[in-house]
Length: 161
Image (cartoon, rainbow, N blue to C red; front, side, top):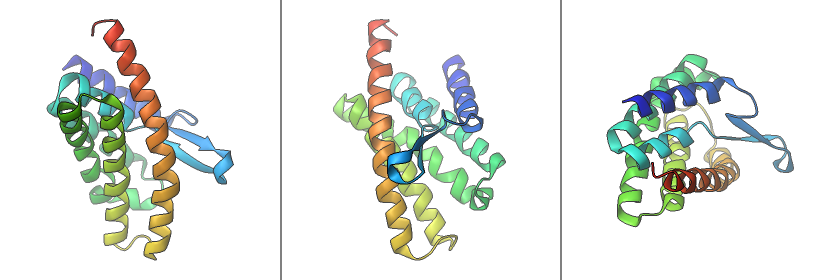
């Protein structure tokens, strides 16, 4: 429970701290990659699906409360997809024992879930724009997430956490 609280708090801190929660990628024309889902993935890997679900819920609620851009004021966009990050990351880690693969699947769950809801609910059109965002942001976020999650999990294993 303590780990869930710490990781949930970290998600909130990342959501309000520029350059931590959103890493600018100047080589991609000013696009930013989010890191706010990383505590969800780490929680799921280290403590199981319920911790992942709980931290994902906190991440979603913090996105909902910030509501930037405006479509995040819809809980179907900001909260619902984030609940599944920890579940998919946990399941992937359980099956593969790979923190890198768990990070990739968890990150893809976030990107695909949020962008699917944005598109289905009509907040962003045409589909080509949504797919472009998925390709650019999603790729950057997968790479960053895989590196950070791998490094943190390696450190935690060294510390015998």
